[in-house]
Length: 419
Image (cartoon, rainbow, N blue to C red; front, side, top):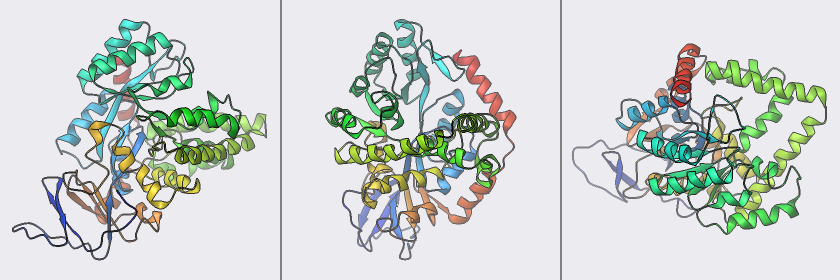
């Protein structure tokens, strides 16, 4: 992934989960030699914006070629998942997670930690770092003084921030060096543009982001497009694919979001057209971000609404292709670009000596056909080889699972601990 080409007939030596050597011929005694059989070896995909609710979903990511995820709504259960993955007790993508979402006082909800003062803001950052969360997630409604305290403590605690932009500060405020990625193309529309889909007004915003050499942008085009999909399909909640959603989320969040947008189109028939136009403008934002040289990192917001874990990354990549990126540039968003966002992920994203052996073996060249990534023949996670039969079994286990009560108890645990 350092040039738009294919290296032909190479051997890759994997030792203890890492790439030891790449050469035309490698002679090592006493190890399995696996023949790629005219297939293509490519880095495993990274989804930089997900919401994981159960361990079945981890299999869905692997089945779709996703070998690392960044979970952006951390709860105690995610620390347990992370520990089991790091100790190789379960087959799963490498797992990185923020702590709970830090918000302002007015953004009330059981999914938010409302910060009251500067002292509390700093204490939360210290606590999340000590408990094992990888990043801090800042969210809607953070006022400048409290936000400053979060940034200041994050720098002292040496923990990166991932920012869902707050409307209480200028959009440019999120270009602070401690903030490594900004989430959602729609936030550019909703905050600095005030829903005015104007390319001329967009330019200075893109220019300001491009001047920040430490900022990546995670567009999550798919999750917003799914609003349009819900309004166009009144039976979407009954679709077979929704069987892959977590049971509790399907019965609560998916239903709630569908009803919201169903009612919106009933009240105003122009809503459908408005949402479609905003989605199309998001594609324009991708074009402008890419042209300005801003690192785009692939994220889907999977796990909420009707945005499916694992499957959705391929729709997200297709939208980047629609925005004019080449297949190589699209692939970079879910590999090398993602890996460069945080220092703790630098070992991922490329196939080179010393990197983690997170790899996909696919039937066709993804530089020619991106859809070849949808169903890899083999997935390697830290060198552990999973064949297609195993990957398909993960999908079957995840479909129509009966885990509503278990998920509810884990969610309740988070409310007790964080509230």
